[in-house]
Length: 142
Image 1 (cartoon, rainbow, N blue to C red):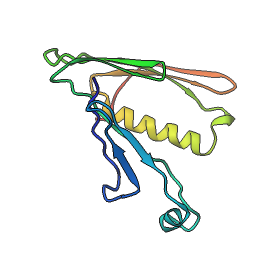
Image 2: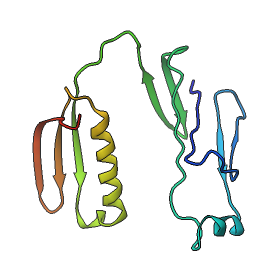
Image 3: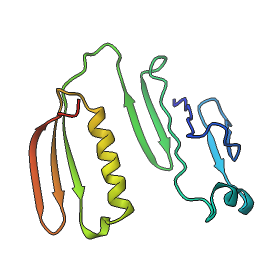
Image 4: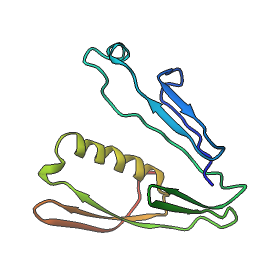
């Protein structure tokens, strides 16, 4: 099963509590009171609570994580060579994505494009009132 490892931007944040009811489960609770929120900013808390985790691929390389009727199957053999990828991104740039949403998408795409390999290719399908397609772009980020 999943062995979560949690990383917080501020490890000294005592407002985030991690409970481990079972060895392969974790519950993260973050419930600051009004005074705690005011200490974090004049207008209260703004931002996101990020929880990042990984799975234990060494002791059990084939795992299934199930939660609330959804599941993900991790299959990560360690002895295979890395394969080139061709990833297709479908991006909504319509008016409904203005402001924070479009900024989050741009940030996500910057991160994704720095993570894919220099031998990988990607295609973009960008839509709003129409559709624009960029087919088979070489990753030049590296």
